[in-house]
Amino acid sequence: MSFFGFGQSPELELVLSDAESRRRVEHKTEEGKKEKYFLFYDGETVSGRVVLTLKNPNKRLEHQGIKVEFIGQIELYYDRGNHHEFVSLVKDLARPGEFTQSQTFDFEFTHVEKPYESYTGQNVKLRYFLRATVSRRLNDVVKEMDIVVHTLSTYPELNSSIKMEVGIEDCLHIEFEYNKSKYHLKDVIVGKIYFLLVRIKIKHMEIDIIKRETTGTGPNVYHENDTIAKYEIMDGAPVRGESIPIRLFLAGYELTPTMRDINKKFSVRYYLNLVLIDEEERRYFKQQEVVLWRKGDIVRKSMSHQAAIASQRFEGTSSHEAKAPGQPAENNGQQ
Image (cartoon, rainbow, N blue to C red; front, side, top):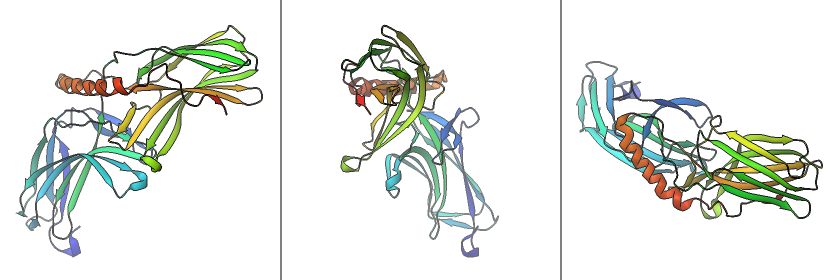
């Protein structure tokens, strides 16, 4: 629609150069719906074309310049006016002037650094997108196109098992063990629970996977806990000396890699929460953080170098930041 009923009215379209062959993946929107987006990895080139179509042939389109941007930004929902950009690349496609017919402009952002995974959470959104702009005196014409970025990782060199105890003096003593402390998103959590002392009547036991999203800093920190999965271990009373195996498949759940202090704006951490309920409905629990990472799928050969870069970046952060398996877990006690 033309402005105030006169002048030329253009339409913009963004088209990726490898749109036919590039993989698309589902990603959750802010409204909670799932939509498909083109998938990229760290270090990959982003190229394509901007198609400018004039609705009224033979009428002039005057403009102050045409550009395309590649942007990575974080938006905190409680601070929507401010977009925190961590990647901002610009290509000028045309100098100020005028057009009388439709135009196509090619663009290429070479080996773009995409350090973080795309994420849509309860209080924060991290997104990557292309934005084409036709600058005009009165009203700019803008078109955006979101993409999704996955961060790939390799198998962690240090991946110790987790051994912990839950105890209430003279009433309950349980040991539990998980086979690893770091799991990829399609992994299987294998473990065992040993009942060494049982003097209270336990009627139910389960393991929960809890996602904890932390946003903000200092006094303005917000924690949002979301129970992703509940896995019933037993229904009934255990006896002393009994052991119960655990086998929890992660592939069926909506999980992301662990994210630590992303651009000093937010974190996403995962915990295994062991919950026991006695016959008087009292709850006993123990939490242990686990690290989740995205295992590289079989990707095109052209991606192998970029995937290696992403893997090195993961190894350089997670190996130093991961909590030692023997550290005490939070929230050990009775609710």
